[in-house]
Every structure is written in C-alpha cells, then in structure tokens.
Length: 533
Length: 69
Image 1 (cartoon, helix red, strand yellow):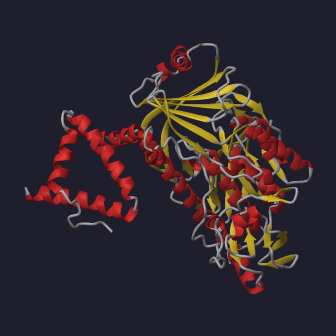
Image 2 (cartoon, one colour; image 1 turned 45 degrees about the vertical axis):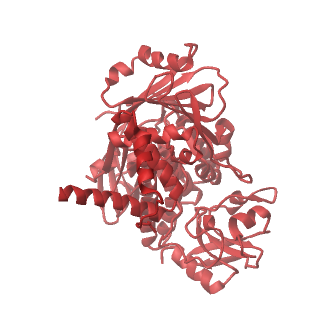
Image 3 (cartoon, rainbow over the protein chains, first blue to last red; image 1 turned 90 degrees about the vertical axis):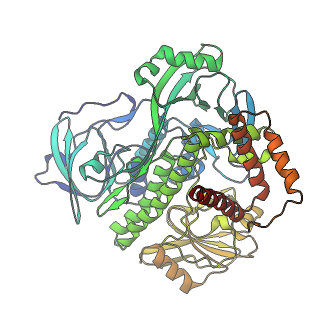
C-alpha cells in the first residue's frame, strides 16, 4: 500500500506537501477534483483555476516521467494553451513544422503541407517532448496561483478507492504520511489509458487492438535533416516494415520502426538490437540512445465520458494509435471543452451543459478513432487483399498524382467540428463552411496581433462590419463584443459572400451561432442554448 | 449514376486487350495489376455515388453467380 514510483521522473513539478485536509476529522469537500496531473489534467486545472473555480489535482507521482512520449502538438492545442498562458513558451522551445514527406524504398512518393495559408499566430505543429509540455503548463499554473487562481496540485497523492454518489464522490487517498479522504462535487478522471478510476468504477473500454508492434527510439545526435515529418514504407534500410523520422528539441530525433506482430519484446528492446536498426537507417553509429519503448496500436473508447458526477477526459476516455498525433491533442481539447462547462455548472448552469461535453467529445473521439483506424489499416494491412491494394497505391503514386492522397501514413490531428451539437443554433449566415456553428474559430490577423488571442475565455460577440452592444448578459453568462474590420483574411474565413456577420463564440472558441447582423432576440436564445437551457 | 447498359464500342476488342495485358504474368502479378487498374478507373470515375454503386454491383453479382453454380 505504500507509495512507490512506477517510473523515473524527468521533472519534479509538484513535490509532496502535507495538506490541512489530511488533519481534518471529516473529508473536506472540493468543487472539482482531478485525478492525474498529465497534459489533460493540468490544462483542465489551469482552465478551471483561471475561471475562479477551486480545483484540486491529485497525482501518484511528484512530476512527469522520462521519455518524449506525446510529441506532436497541433495548432488547436497550442491555441488553447495560448489562452491558458503557456502557448508561447511551448512554441519557443518546440520544433515548428508543417510539411511531411513519404518515401517508399528510396523514392519520395508524396508530400504534404498542413498549413498552406498564412495569417495564423500558431503553426500547424510543434514537436515538444511531453515532459516539457507538462513543465510549461505547470509553470503557467504557478503564475496563475500567484495571481490568486485557486489551483492545488498534490503530488504523491494516490487514489486507492472512489465512492460515487448522486451528488459527488469521496476518495480514499494514500500519501507518504499515510491515508486520508477528500470529497468532490465533481470528479474528473484524467488518469490515462489504464485509468485506475475507470477500473474502480467497473466501467468498460471497448475497441480494437491492431496486431503490430512499433519501436520508438529517441536518439541524440547532430544532423541536418530538415524539420519535416519523414515516413518510409518498405524502407531501403530494412530496419522495419515502415519507419518514421522526426526532429525534437535538444538534438533528439524520434525514430519509429514497425516491427510486426510476433516479436520478442525483451530482445527487441536490448540496446544492441535497437542500435543495429538505427545504424542501418542512418549509416553510422554516431549517436546516443536517449529513450526507447515498444507499443501496440489500440483504438477504443468508453461508451460515455460522463457518469453522473464523474467525468472522463483524455486517454482515460479514449485511446487511439499514435500515428496522427490524436492522443494528447484530443485530450487537451477535451479539457478545453469541459473547463468552461464545469465552471458554469458549478456556478448554477443546467446540468445538461455537462451532457453536451459527452455528446461533443464522444463525436470527436469517434472522428479520431476513425482516422486512426484507417491509417492503421493502411500501415499494417490485415489481409492479403488489403496489402494488395496498399501496394497498388504505393506503386501508382510515383507516376500518378491521383494515387498520392490515398497514401495514409497518419492523418494528423485537426479539431472536431461539433456539427449537430445541442449547443449550436442553426446557421443563419451564408458564410464559409469552415466557421459554421460547432467549428473552432479560425485564427486571422487582427490589429497588431491575432484574432484568437483577442477572444479571451468568455463568450464573445464577434461583430464583423456590423453594430452590436458592448455586452449581452443572458442565462448567467456574459458575452463581450469584439468589433472586427472585414480584412481579406476575415472575409475569407468568416464572411465568404456575406457583407457583414455577427458570430456568437463560446468560451472554448467554438462558434455557437452566426447571423448577418446583431439580433437581440436571436442572440439571447442562442446564449441560453449554448448554456445548456 | 452507374451506367449499366453496354457502353464499350468494341466489346470483343476490349476484352482481348484486357486479357492481353495480363499475358505472361504470374497470378500474383495479375492480382497486383488488377488492383492498380481498379484504382486508376475509380479515380477516373471520381463520383462517389457511382463508385459505391459499382462496388455494390461487383459484390452482389459475385454472390449471385456463387449461388447459381
């Protein structure tokens, strides 16, 4: 029952400190308790704290474990982290990229550009090792705490049991000073793919396991490969059925090899065997192995992400294969979706608002699982005929442009558009599809900066070439006007053929509704709807 | 719409050319050629509804033949 670290730490971010709760006679009750201080738990805590909602985060370690793990952070995630105050640090440290190349044997057969248009503050992707992502988020939490945000992160607090009732949960915790209990109005499980909370509640996690193994080798070396995602099918260096090369900060390179299904894990993880594969690929052995791991592809999710007062977010709720960067990115987007809703419900908004988290993020998870499953089917063909067509695509791609879009080495993370969400108001503008109700707002240049950084974290009345009041209060929420001139980028991304538009934007920067002009009755109805009434 | 009426002006000539294309290939090579050919033709058609109708027609007519024989 004692607390043993299950892995070595990269950074000690939240050392154990005794809490007054441990001396209380009865369990102290908190509005929101998060289990797991990973990228999802920490960003959710930061969001809640910045909204003034008291939040306690529990983690059974005192910081983040070694290893690059989640590496590719997508534009939408960076925009969320910008709102939370950590985006710029992340981009400052990360490796910015947007282009990828796909090879077969020695030949380049396909290339792609994930952000072919200008006028966005954040890049398509950065590569940043997960420990740095968590460190920057924790640093933003420390700044928020200094500004009075009610966030507590309790290291070496392991959840040993959870008792859930209709109005909350009580947790049995273990610490270096022994056990204690706390209670929560809402319990949010951000405790990873093997979620102990999910197991304690006896909830299922259904899906597919793909019969293939991938080896990650992070190697330290100085090299001048471009900062692009390079992927090989049937590579000439024969170190695996496929291979991936990606640059990380600090002269570390992520290399992935596809090993097949029947392998001896222990043997494959021996440094000399890993080095043999890397040597063949690089043609030299002038590097150090930094971190290695073998993983399988799995795509699964919980049937529902909300179970009364317990909400699941990130890998605890859904798991995808890594090619596509849809794991940590979708988890942070879960947190973005949940933060403002949970804060509002705790402040008196209807409980139904939390059900919309389930509806929207289950939809996003299904989209991610669909993309991930399709990529995996292309990478690791399951039958003779699927291999036949996969190879036909690769054979055709060199000479025939039409075949190149069929090549699937991972479709990289894009945010979900919540079409059909109960929070959406029917589209009343003949505007661009990309900013329809349910869509995340596209960024655009605005003043000396960018649009998204000007939206803040509340509701916004985005008035483009039309009048609107300074603010509108409805359903316990306040929407603040932001007036924007129809620049070419704003026109392209928000107006299309319309001459003016009024957008109602949610606190998570998704569009709730849009109209050709400000219409108070319509706006009030839309705000009620977006608040779960 | 999937055109289900005869549409090839020179049916015997086309058929001979199709078989001729496979001449000298091993069954494996022929399968690979067929897969490439399907992809080339599918892209030429492009229309998703027509492609779905073609896939359905290929699958169900195969089943019927199987039952009849």
